[in-house]
Length: 106
Image 1 (tube, rainbow, N blue to C red):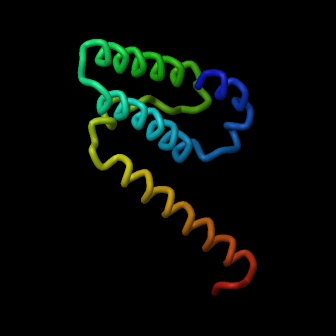
Image 2: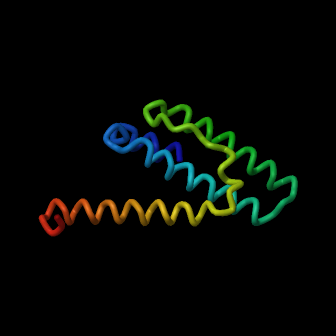
């Protein structure tokens, strides 16, 4: 994650921060949920804690993102559905925008 962010840091200014931040947090939450579903032992609890700390610290180092790590969203059992709905919504908005720009919709 840190390598990716350092590579694209200059391009982040052009991106929609809110949407980008939401997507980053969703991805991180999916990882945490996968770890929780895999095993509930102390070893995995420590891994989850370490992952949360590292991801939070990395996001905090990239001030340009203005993207705090929301550590408690991974508890949401409907997270995957919410992400799919967000993607669908963005796709519909993009398609409507393309259609409008091409004069296909009024």
